[in-house]
Image (cartoon, rainbow, N blue to C red; front, side, top):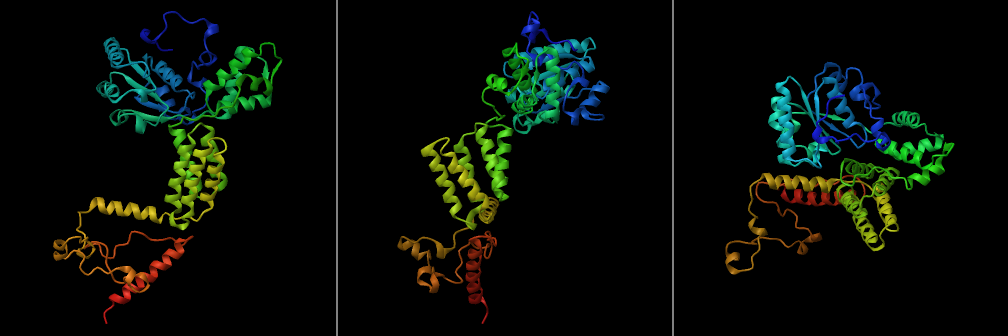
Length: 440
């Protein structure tokens, strides 16, 4: 194993009995690592780095308990590099400077250095920038670990100098293998198949969560001959699922909910709503997203959808959880089965793009307000036709867009729901315009 910086290590080693099970089971060799075959299989990036002894700077991005720190340690050991650990929660620029000085001293003695930054997303821009010249110069290999999306949380300059590797939650088979190792190490009673399945479900792909729960279970039931579901429930309490309330899992779940509604799948939409709320998301946020879906994906194909989404939000404000959640579920089902149209959404985006990229075209004179005699004398409002006084309430041939944009179309109704009738109405009005403008 690589030498670790004494600044970040305890003065005295902890007694074996006080070391958490997850730490005692930490792999000592790459072949002991479970999961992450897409990075550690033959010919895969981290396997190649391990075998060649070349460790480029990298970002390890993945959920908790999937082996980010372990891989960094093993890779440093494979290269024989000095291993410096910084926690972005506790460290500052002073600690970074000290790590740089150590790396410079070791380089003078022909020794490579790996600087591992745990939770690198917690470093601010200035702290992240402090690494740049040294990573660029190759003074040390930089390895950052993060549970947050590096695209948003890591400076682009640092990202450009490091390869991002995505680590995945551990599969059930990986977690079962870890349980077998833990049972052998602790000489603990065997788990029933049902208890093992429940424990794996509780872990939700997180090895640390699995091993901590199993260690607590084994310690709480020292005289048991078998560890069953009843003992597991008594130890674990309420089953919790992973929910980061603002990170990638949260936004991925929101995305799945939105796409299920857009795809007219009420069952999937209900499932993702339940997952969102089960993970601890604020139901008010879910309600706001439902209002957005009603406008973006249903629009005028069924205008009632927007009203129903707003009603569901109001009901939740009045009732709270859990009673108010039923109103959100009702809205989700309605939105999912409603006819879909993004015509207004597309029209609004097109108009905004037109206005943003265009000059400020003057309002045509006949559309301008004329509250004073002077403005009337300048021609404001001259020739304007009041639609209510026209046959059918429509001033055929009248023009409302500014000069240069005549005839431009932004809104195109779809042939679903109420927009079928809207399309028919617009077609009739445009036929009147064309008939009036035809040469006689």
